[in-house]
Image (cartoon, rainbow, N blue to C red; front, side):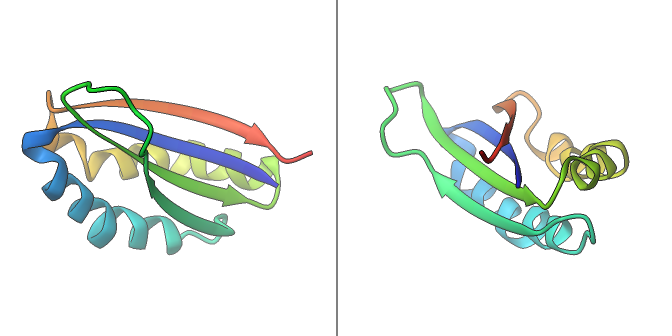
Length: 100
């Protein structure tokens, strides 16, 4: 199993709207992709005061080929749902993990 973690640190002033965008737009978009096995959505609870909230989309793929397909064909579309609305109000980190 491959886990692709999309983590966003969002300014407090935009965090509720950002969370809503992930729930109403980003997650349905991700779930509609054949290459995706499962999606989970988390809010980081153990963070230092950084002026915002940290939200994480955990996207699971059955194998590296499924991840690569998503990465090449859908990742930019996913980020395109976010960037125009929240430019300058979030930081983005992408991590890839493999289940052992």
